[in-house]
Image 1: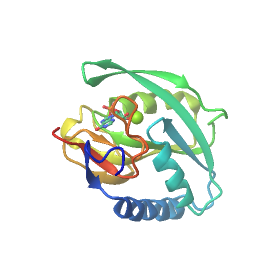
Image 2: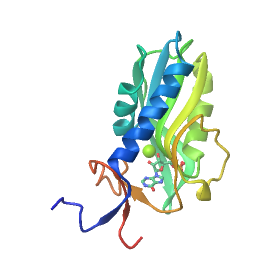
Image 3: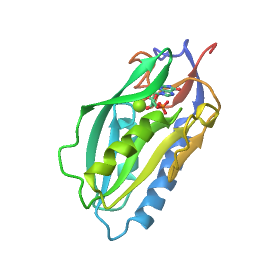
Length: 177
Ligand code: IMP
Ligand code: MG
């Protein structure tokens, strides 16, 4: 039995995730044909999604990573975000797709988009695997969206609960939560 079997229930299974990621990849391939695309992935949770998404895009893209850490106020982010790891290459003139695992309150992405303005990218779009609109505190235009989920705490496929469960291969909800 898997280590997580007693703790979680499947919310989005692997075939459903992979099918949707192939669709997003095909859409991005069409939209960025002939352009220099960079996937700017937000560490750490989005790495699992980003590597599958990158392989679903048929373009010579570049991968960059940005580490952010939100100051927590209770269980929820305060929207005050710190950059903990910066991209290694300049972003000026590049077409960026910011890859996120989940947009919850939207405050992290709002900060990030504001921060990116000073980098003078040619364009910036947002790709998020999940969106939890029930908790939105700011409107974020998500250009590429995997799934809309209800207001439940999810883990797996990169998403953690106190750093655990990232390696669960599907999106799950904690039992009894
Ligand atoms: P936001 O600023 O509230 O949109 O928060 C986004 C970040 O909070 C995500 O990048 C996740 O790291 C984390 N987060 C939000 N909801 C969940 C969840 O249900 N499970 C795990 N992490 C979450
Ligand atoms: Mg995150």
